[in-house]
Image 1: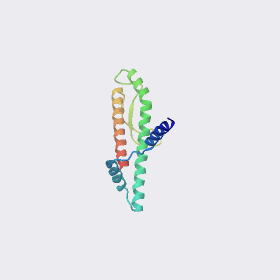
Image 2 (image 1 turned 30 degrees about the vertical axis):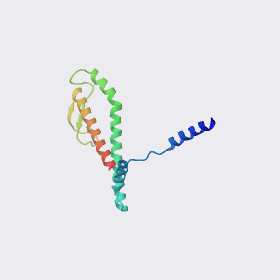
Image 3 (image 1 turned 180 degrees about the horizontal axis):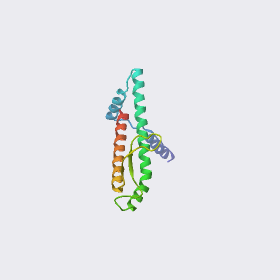
Image 4 (image 1 turned 90 degrees about the vertical axis):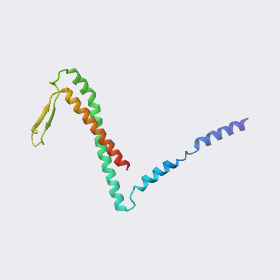
Length: 139
């Protein structure tokens, strides 16, 4: 009786230890990925430095995206409380390059609706750029 239970334990342990073999398609995909990596040392250095640059840019955009998400909830709540079209609390300014003081304000938006629309557009553009960098990183 004990032999049967030991056999069952051995079978279950060997079944769990079996490695899942990759499919033919997965192997082809891996070969394709590896074939994109240059063989020449100078080209490899350039290839991986470009990837590192893409990763750095993607990470910066992800950081900005996270900052927007963190502050967005509070901002949205406050902007929705300010029911008027022209906000007294919020404005979005576009100004020229800063020198020693404030830059020259080129235009200013006081509308909460337009500011929220701008934020949504900005988030969408950041997400799109992150996806572009992800594609470049993947090869």
